[in-house]
Image (cartoon, rainbow, N blue to C red; front, top):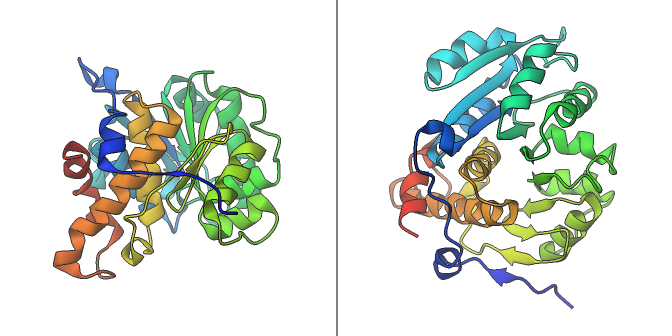
Length: 287
């Protein structure tokens, strides 16, 4: 029997209104994105800008040092820190005290966009968990999910605010098998197994078994960088004060509907991930 979940609609979201912080940028929180490699700096850029578009007050990017200068020019709103690289251009797993200090001060840390080495990502993930405050929210994506699948008890019982954002390939690694057709059920299983909120292709689940599904997503979202946008969007919503399940539901809806808004201009499969970014604030504001 298929799992039961609530459809994410504008009415549901209006009854679950996002926090609207008052005051300066600090009230909207600091998002730190840890990711990138010499060859994939764009993933960090997309996630970071999405976090700002979703309402984060302060953005910090930590990426491979060879890309830091370029990122700082392309995202002038962000503090950009270069991290040591391996010979292959991946971020090293021992980046030193600078990253540890940034993690300790951040309200939300997104780990994974653009990382390319599973072993060093595992080391980075442990550093983040060790340095992050108990109230720091975490978004784990891409290679960070692969690293988590190698240490499945890493989050269990921690009480941390964590959202996992797997695609089907990453879900396969986390489950240890191919996902079935009932993605509601798979999201619920993952949430319970890893003790975190899970957002799996618009299917949201919490460790206690609550579940929602977003039905507006279309084929155009299956494009390079789209997942990075979704992860950053989630981080930005967490930064402004949403709880993990709320942020995951709002992010799934805003991601999907932002894609819908691009269809008249570019067709169902012609838009780019970076074009989603400018649609995010309007989509959120008009729910």
